[in-house]
Amino acid sequence: MEWTKGMKCWIISFINQKGGCGKSTLCMSIASAISRRHRPDGVQYKVLVASADPQGTVLRWSSAAPDDKPLPFPVINLNASGDKVHRELKKFVDNYDFILVDTPASVSTIPYSALLVSDLALMPLIPSPPDLWSSFETKPVIDNVREINEDLQVRLVINRCQSNLNVSKEILNIVDKLDMPVCHSKVSMLTAFGEAAGAGTSIYDCKYETRRAAVLQIEDLVDEVFEILGVEKEEVVNER
Image 1 (cartoon, rainbow, N blue to C red):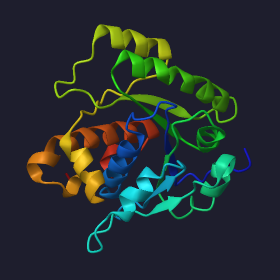
Image 2 (cartoon, one colour):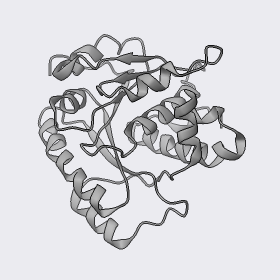
Image 3 (cartoon, one colour):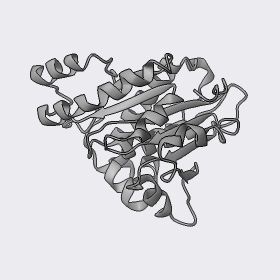
């Protein structure tokens, strides 16, 4: 690596070579949740979202935000950085507590570059055999990066489940073959996620009857992410 990341900034990358698995949605939803929490000194966490995906979903999401209610975090464009995403992220680590990186659904050097400086990689998985098998292409990238970034942690996130959150034995068997830890928290296919993206807002700004389940699931996932990263729970103020 060209540099050593500062201790006060955590970098989380969202990866999967399979498109349509919900990387951008999870990235923006988790960023919204973290930005509502507080550091030990009582100051809200400063969150930055970096778009390293040429498709630019998080950029379009941010630009659609109402002028009178912008998102509670900035979104920057690193789409032209290519395999130098890790170098560009260096410019922001001293000014933010969390940087969340949205990466492309492709076999490229961009996810590899982002993972070089990440503390945690979250890999969304849609619980269907075809989607899970397609995700196997991502594992060699992770294995190669870990030869350099030995501290990188990885978690699979079961995403876009049906509302009952049931996962079949067949799917669990496929997940086991990926040989990566799975988050206990699962995320359903809920209206609030699409509503937030379309309006350029966060799930917290959706109608209560729409947002409640989505907020609870994302908050639970962020609790788990904080535990993985070693952020002490008593240092967090939750604003659900």
